[in-house]
Image 1: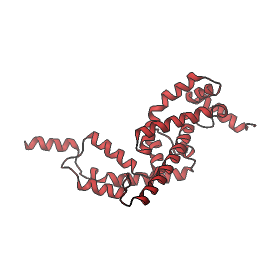
Image 2: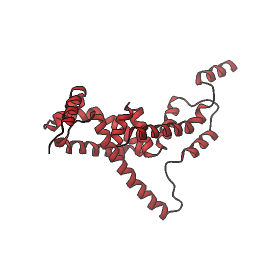
Image 3: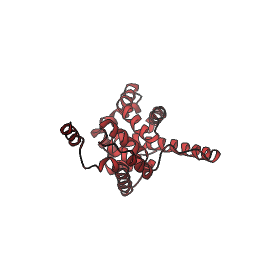
Image 4: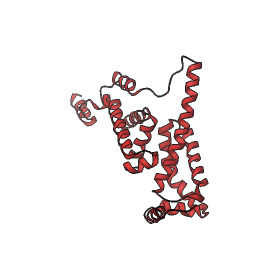
Length: 224
């Protein structure tokens, strides 16, 4: 199969700019050490992104292994037409999407079989209402806020969640996210806009106090 001049130019560009591309090209040539270096560098963050997507640590670790297995199997036909991380998360998006679809089908079957069954991820409006009713007298501490943000991200739809994670944790541009998710740049902008709106709605009960934790602590100290 011939390779276009444009593809060769892109390959040269990314080989120069991206050290991970250079490692992957070594993997293509048969270097086990280069593959181990890529796994070591990306595994932790990859598992974190997948855990946000599937809401289960063990499953995320299994899916990460599947992603790296696909990377290794594709090594001989690898041509760097994008940053390595963009290519890696294209594979990750496909693996996660397949897993989520299979899981959704199983849940649908279980819900039909058992009318009392419930979905593990609650709608954003329900979650926001529950959090509002349980609002403490002071803002949650940092650890609690991190948990709330995690829950809010997990309550997004799969595509919104993936776009948000690639933007927030991987620092990808609109174009890079579009390549990873096989979408247009405009579609990514729309996904992120809706995701931010949904997150803002879910987190509103925690952010509407109007006073910071330090201000509340000073007030408590002055009253004692």
